[in-house]
Amino acid sequence: MRMYDIIQKKRDGHELSNDEIKYVVDGYTKGEIPDYQMSAFLMAIYFMKMSSRETTYFTMAMVSSGDILNLSCIDGVKVDKHSSGGVGDKTTLIIAPLVAACGLPVAKMSGRGLGHTGGTIDKVESFPGFNVKLDIDKFIENVNKHKIALVSQTANITPADKKIYALRDVTATIDNISLIASSIMSKKIAAGADAIVLDVKVGSGAFMKSFDDAICLANEMVQIGTSLGRNTIAILSDMDQPLGVAVGNTLEVIEAINTLKGEGPKDLEDLCIELASHMIFAANMTTTVADARNLIVQKLKKGEGLLKLKELVTAQGGDASYVDNPEKFEIAKIKKEVILDNIGYVYKMDTEAIGKAAMILGAGRETKDGIIDLSVGLMVHKKTGDLIMQDEVVVTIYGNDDEKIKQAEDIIKQAYTTGNVEKYKEKLIKAIVTKAEVLRY
Ligand code: URA
Image: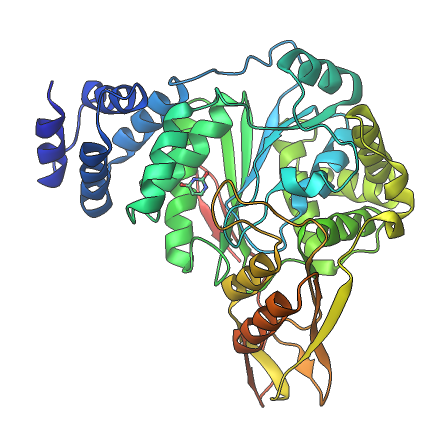
């Protein structure tokens, strides 16, 4: 087999065989195929696309490029949740303790933030002492004992995806639905999930800006999961505005704690209840999604999710007193209130720009080795459909550097589009995609 012939075959729009796909993924991971040939191959996929069979096989090849976690010594169905990335998305910090409080084992491997989107591992490090690097035995022991553990992805999970993702990032081949779907699903499958609940974000702050693209991505991922024997469901949720109010690591942790106390923003609480219910249902713990929803709401009302969060933080060496006393968290010193020149209803938000403003303050990284400042971020008080009155604050910036705060303020002002006529509120849940159907809301 020759890489040249495979590139040419894909360039000319033909379907590749399973052996050819394996040859490319293995060869590139081992360093036998150079970056320039892999770049050409990825660009050929970008233009000519992959069939469902090719995408599934590409996923399998990436899964088998590294370790596959064996979670069989954890009792119960292991249901993983994944978000395709957004601004202010702190759902894992709320959902994981809630479902664990219902008895569902949560063996969660999460990532760090990149670009305008945040990552759970950075957020959870706001708790002093929290260890995100448990070895696999301790990880499994903690899940068996506490029903929950949260660690960063280990080096050996899907090394092919790591290498290919890095190349896609510099060759303008990130935004291909088959490549995104296989990248996400390979990590979930290698991390030992029996069932997968996907939160596919759609809107100005998401990878998928249009509803139709988000449906295609959701369908592709559900198809991959199903054909690899994993019960998979995707929920399309709004990312035309930040989720909740807080954007930035420690601010988001505080908002997650408030939500587990029943005092969080409504959109955040509603999305967490929806995703958590589907996880419980996917694990066959209830006979209907409605029963699962009742169970989750009860756990939330009784504060059992909050207790589980404290148990998680303590079990991983963190200081759980911060859960009871969130004022102990360090928040950036300089506070700046943003007021728009225009008043009226918020028509539209450039949510990616809001994420970028937080990144400029230091809340996110531009490159994967960038250093972040957990204490900085934004509180977004006005979102789509809200009325802004004269001199009302739309966003509060928390920063540690005047120059960066000024840059963030300018970006935030540009991110809002206002008008005089009342604007309808965006629907939070836009569709649910299963192997059988697409339910649009
Ligand atoms: N997230 C991933 O893990 N992979 C992609 O390709 C895009 C988003």
